[in-house]
Image (cartoon, rainbow, N blue to C red):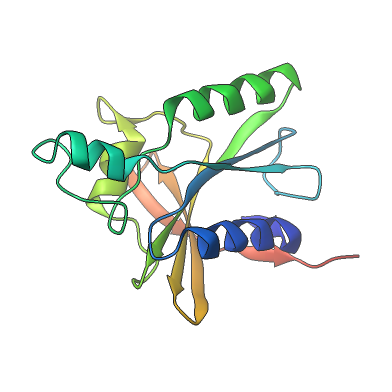
Length: 159
């Protein structure tokens, strides 16, 4: 998966702003695999702490170990993408003080009845520590393997 450096900077800025909690959001743009300058990074509020405080039995993790995108913001982003004739290209979130990997929790959130809710979307995960962004990894659904597999993330340099 190719992504323009400017879009990575947008994601990294959101991850830094949310640290030590997980950030989350999505990217939409014209249909196509690459994420370029015209694509839009939409940070979404992580409401995991609110859910954890309200119902810790159902939401045992707080925002330092999990994320839950604010539904009203997601709906607004989906509507905006649709109004502009664009598609959801990627979802992203961060792993504070952790490596970038696709966890069981990530898999559970991405699947509906054992099928991906967004089979064409890439899931980007940013590993962030107090002093640096350590890495970003991408994951996509593999119909053959029936699981999410890592895909290379290649930054597109400014021209």
